[in-house]
Image (cartoon, rainbow, N blue to C red; front, side, top):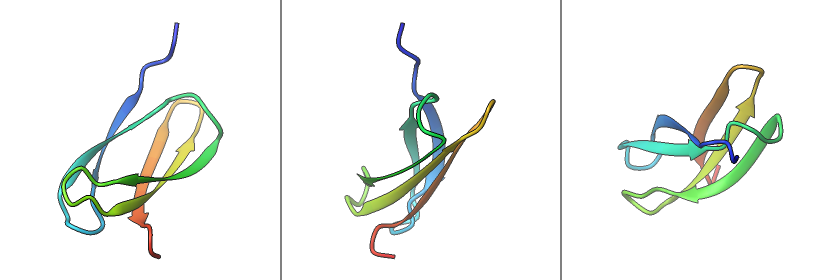
Length: 64
């Protein structure tokens, strides 16, 4: 059985729209990847950190 993705509501650092970012609850303790905003199509730097009972997601500008 595959774990389900958790949704985190974040604000796009470019257009300011609230967006839903799906992340896997299981994986490396920290992770960084690039994903495009579904509203303005600009690239985010997605930072994910996983703790025992929590998954934290932060969005940054890819060009920073």
